[in-house]
Length: 223
Length: 223
Image: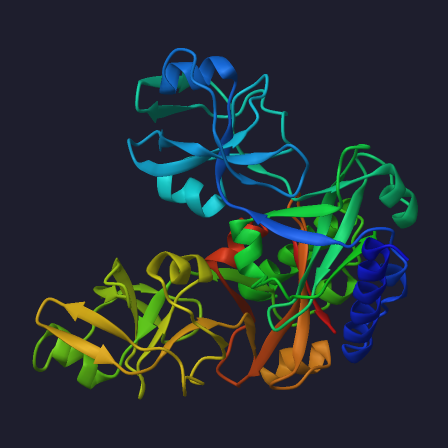
């Protein structure tokens, strides 16, 4: 066996053992083509190259600081200050790169309440009619007319994963999180793409509500 | 019929109609002796009379500002400043009255992370071995050696409610919250007492995770 195969076999054995000890049905998970990752996305924004240049100066390019689990995606060195409707601010709002063709700010309800925003739950990119805000960078201000959302909980997966779980793009699934603050998210939006790696994205409210840590057992289930 | 009975009948009809429209099984809920309330408890503290006097001056008595749903409980006019381990603070931490025979600070994980606390999930009163903090009032400082917790999600109910749901004190139940951020809390701790009115207490992370509003349909279920 190649070393990646050996490592996957070991992972499978450990996973099956943990699931057995918890009295969970690990059969579906242990036969899964890919390991499930559940990660918390802290508040952040996606910007166009034009927006980056307004905020950081002509010709400025984002600098990757930390690569994320999805290929090619990164948290940038650059951060901005978010100014809400009552002039309350959140500083150090991280920019995720690479640049996109729209501007979008993703915050949790806790942030929204602190700022005095009334933000809707939306899937990424679906920003028509959402509130705007002001962003401040070292070289300029940018007024967004829309784009502030709470991102809906979602799972990225490949067509292979989708087949394994018996779901398709834009379906909803359940994510059961175990532990002393255990809960089940009933509406996890499915996003299927050949480039996607199996990963659920929670926001900080969702992650804190269930006390998610690196070792919290989680199960993805067809609704 | 007495007016309270008429009002309960109307409530039942409206509830049954809403549940039917949502395609939910409202039969259990509509036959319940008492209407289920799900409320969010923002961060707060409970103090002894001695602690109140240290913080607000000799002989000081708490002043009720807003009566809560549970009989005799109130949010006081008085608030304190909570100072965490890294000298970060939360101002305006509300005191809930009346005074108790122990001091306890209840914060959400979002607060705990902001302050740099590592707080455990506990049931109210179970504070042995939990972190302490410093409280600051207008007349003095109070150092707590323990008592900072994240309160576990719980439901208050009367023996009559417990009988209806088929549960007993210290059981766990499920709370299903509907809506676009729908989720099911799998470990709702049951507290039964003749003085209790049927009410689930979430913290702000839990309330924000499921986007709870006054009109969000919720179902309490035996696990």
